[in-house]
Length: 545
Ligand code: CAO
Image (cartoon, rainbow, N blue to C red; front, side, top):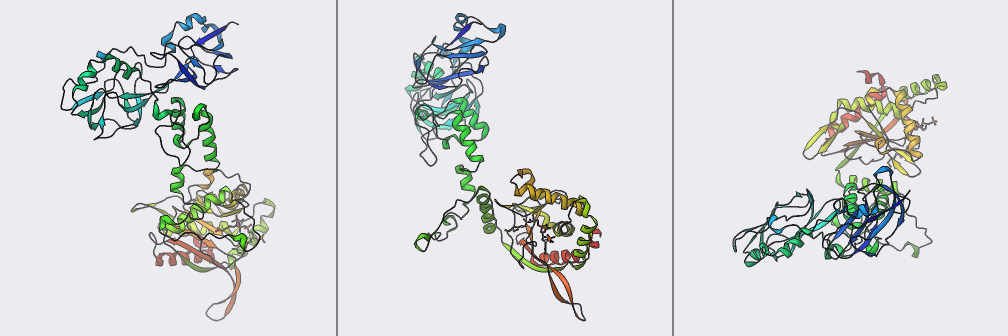
């Protein structure tokens, strides 16, 4: 099959442009109109699309090459009958052209008011075929002294970026657009005041206007090297429009991405690598860092605290330093926020589970063959759901000044895993029996330990139980899992002498520690919650009431 040339089309006034990005490689299958390379002059950045679909057989340009209209970009083996001879391709500049053409007639661009003084409107000039281009940068502000041809905003289509210069001089009185707006030819951009001769000069200066229409510009600001996190912001990041579009779709802050392309240009690979590092937790965006305090609390300066003590532990003996795992870091930051932001109080109480434990043991004996072990935690979940229904504010969340009461009962349980604490969630516990809850809990706990829990399995809890019963201890003060408003801590049950009014009798007592958000719950309600929970646990038939 014949190889066909794809050439650089008519790119307006640009004589020679530099190839700054190769977007395809030998062996790629390209579609017609698919961008092949990005070229840049000192005022423009544009993507050159393919004139045909086919298989890339040979690249004829390399990074840094200078090309102009007619230069061969690559050879393709054209797909099917759609193939056209190379000569025909070269003769089809409209299909190929991505840059607005410079020959826009000045008169068609409503750019300047004829008045020599008073308000002067500045409109979007003829920008070629581009429609609904997005304002991605506003470079001036009201009060600025604007010169003729000074860039006011940068707009971007999915193929090109361009700066829109002012058609007049004067003081910027009003800006009519903001970042994110979509604009078209003739739209009012700004109103200048005190614009003297310059405005008139522009209406009669086709050269200036022609460049306004054709300046597919990424000049000095964009040409500045892409900056690393923490670096100074020098304007737009150095990236092609399609890369910026890709970053926008992913929500990637491009100014934080380090470019590894030509002259530090940010490429699609850079955006992908950045996204991966965010997802793996290896780095945080500035926005994430601002939202989530460091696990250790940073330096505490934001809270007006004295700095965290810095100690050279090695001075006192041998040490070993180990980075904390990702889960510990994430849960640490959450725990810190919850501990600091919630005015939490913990009530301790004991519940008599003598009969319940006897029932649990006998049930497990009866069900030995079923393979499902009924756990105390499953009974606790059912008992908590009944108590949450009686005291619904414990199943609510704060939303500003309002309380959101949830008419579902999804219970989270803390699971100790080799990677750290995780909180799987059992959904709709009000609709499930103790056996089903026990089974789901054992599956979720296993998944948690194997590091296989998905985000959906850890979200949506309305209340959490943290049980250390299998391990030991008496009471503790669990930290509320925001935006929940309460959490129940459970420790190891022990046989204790309990006064029944006549004598001390041995009873199996379960220590309960309920931590609650005092903004939502009062101490009396917390005491009632524990008391009611204790009653259910001592006589589980109450769950049915
Ligand atoms: N009192 C006395 N014994 C208890 C008990 C209690 N409250 N709760 C459980 N036990 C016993 C069980 O009877 C069982 O003993 P046998 O093996 O002899 O039958 C053993 O402890 C294990 O119990 P279990 O299999 O029912 O497990 P569990 O429901 O107690 O716990 C899970 C499951 C996932 C919660 C647990 O594995 C876990 O990870 N716990 C730690 C939670 C945690 O870290 N909380 C702290 C958070 S704050 O940092």
